[in-house]
Amino acid sequence: KEYKILVLPGDGIGPEITKATLEVLKAIEKKYDVKFDIKEGLIGGAAIDETGDPLPEETLKLAKESDAVLLAAVGGEKWDNLPTDKRPEKGLLRIRKELDLFANIRPGKAYTALLDASPLKENLIKGVDLLVIRELTGGIYFGEPRGIEERNGEKVGYNTMIYSEHEIERIAKLAFEIARTRRKKVTSVDKANVLEVSAVWREVVNKVWANYQDVELEHMYVDNTAMQLVRRPKDFDVIVTGNLFGDIISDEAGALTGSLGMLPSASIGERYALYEPVHGSAPDIAGKNIANPTAMILSAAMMLDITFKMHDAAKDIQDAVEKALNDGYRTADIWQPGTKKVNTDEMAQAIIEK
Ligand code: NAI
Ligand code: MG
Image (tube, rainbow, N blue to C red; front, side, top):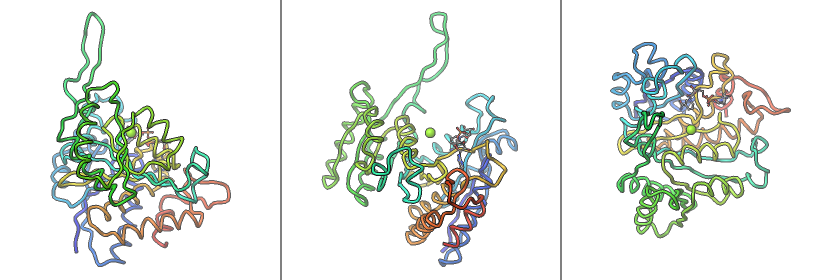
């Protein structure tokens, strides 16, 4: 079996963690009877430098011809002064939109070996295993009207938070479907006490739930969710929410379990899928071969699991990460006294060996 993967290394530590991740995929090719046909494309700052566009047509074309896209990260100081519309991050927003990747999935799992890295007490964090599903192509990040203009002699900026029934319906369905494969609980997060858009959100989620009565559903306001996540994170299984709330809640859920360098994500649409670490391009440590490749490696594992249905291979990678951690292999971001400090390539090698 052959799978086409478009790899987008992007900026900063992107190329380093991409190289490490491709090594892991090579090991999977060897162990399983598969071939990964890997193409590389430009996105973000690297693409701006070469073509003037953070998402060149060629990249989009390659993405649409691939079975999955594996992306590292984009962005950096060099491009920070460009207008919002021309910045590296715009490439990311556009590819998600163009591929209609309406759902972003981020697991938040506590690793036994990294419990110390959590800001929470061990008894609160141990055993946490949750999933945040964030709506990705709608809401306030894309809503119209938006703009900056003069009103009454001063500048105002404005955006629109808008969700339609079909947007809410498809993500709610996905949340219930995924919850069925887990602990069968969905927490839908909104701000229905203040926002009309949330009132519609809640109504549609309830409607979809009618077909999933075996799954428990609770509604929670986003501010309360922010609090409950640090008070009793173990009570959450699947959290589903809109773009803005999900951006914030998923970062919080990620921080619960320790390092950014450990967090993978999947962005799923009806036809396409893109897998990427949660973290950015980490310009402060770029070019030093010290970045943690685990988040991208685990993103590749999600790709094997969700798009290629290579569940055993995905589990191999997840188990190998856990074993490498248990054996004390740590990149600088998760290093603790008494553990072995390794660089990017060495971390990947440790995972491959396991
Ligand atoms: P960041 O996630 O790049 O870095 C935050 C901190 O975490 C830094 O101290 C960094 O060194 C560390 N870190 C991140 N990933 C790491 C890894 N794999 N191993 C070890 N340490 C790691 O976020 P920041 O600093 O806010 O943004 C840097 C650039 O990345 C900006 O241009 C930003 O716009 C962009 N960005 C891109 C994202 C993406 O491509 N999805 C997401 C977030 C930010
Ligand atoms: Mg964010």
